[in-house]
Image 1 (cartoon, rainbow, N blue to C red):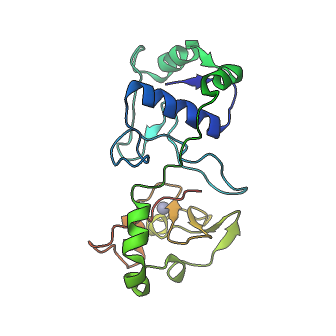
Image 2 (image 1 turned 90 degrees about the vertical axis):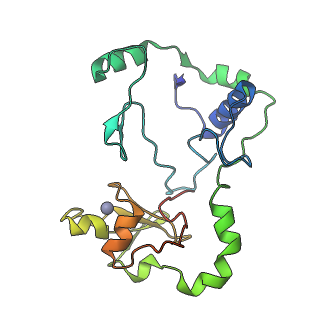
Length: 207
Ligand SMILES: [Zn+2]
């Protein structure tokens, strides 16, 4: 874990992490490799009004496992962990610039699933493609996304403000519930469960 003294550009931090991984011999996902560590955020820049990757911050509760993951080096209690983390040395902007001087820009990590699905299936199955806008209620535009009530949240009586589901305007195959509903739950709430053959990464909104 590397902490920063001040917020620094994703572009620069990504160069740094990719370089550290390279020197440690740790593979990074996306650079032509299927397996490896993932670097977040996955992109250097986000268009104005857009969403970046959802990231679980340190000591955040993992949505899948419903629990926190602790750092070694302190007791497994939030206060002790925060005290421990705030004692760690933080990387400064000038240090980062020294570390990345002359290093190449990191490649955006969007290769693993997206490329294979876009090339192969697109033409043949375009007609059968699931179009979420045809199934959800009225939407409104917020930045680069359409926003509406999440059908899966709605089933449970949640999301009364109708803004949990974000659908990327640019490519409506990408949508996400900010309360964390998995895409399978969203699709079955719409009465269009995901078929086995369909392995498209529809859950993620990326820039
Ligand atoms: Zn939801």
